Length: 103
Image 1 (cartoon, rainbow, N blue to C red):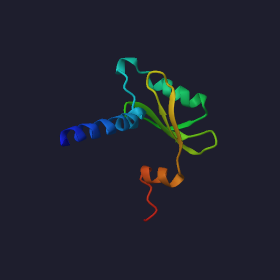
Image 2 (tube, rainbow, N blue to C red):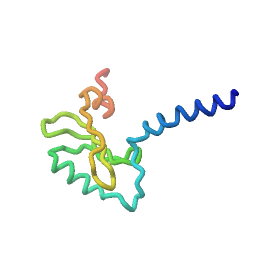
Image 3 (cartoon, rainbow, N blue to C red):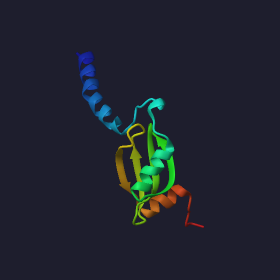
Image 4 (cartoon, rainbow, N blue to C red):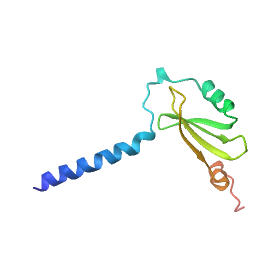
């Protein structure tokens, strides 16, 4: 009985963990668009790029939008589809950049 309940409990949690991983990009590197294409995407949208990095298998753009607000954009590496677009708080970005006002 305990074994059955354990298995059922595991199966109930499994779909939730799969759903949490939806932000990840699982694409072979041979299918990726080059970084230059990501930079062009940003330019076409009026974004100023501070950094393009890879996070969870996706491209991630840190920069500013056309109005100067800090943004973080997750981009699918093969299709260049915007998966997630976030506005960041100014103080969050300063903390990540190592700017410390406690001096």
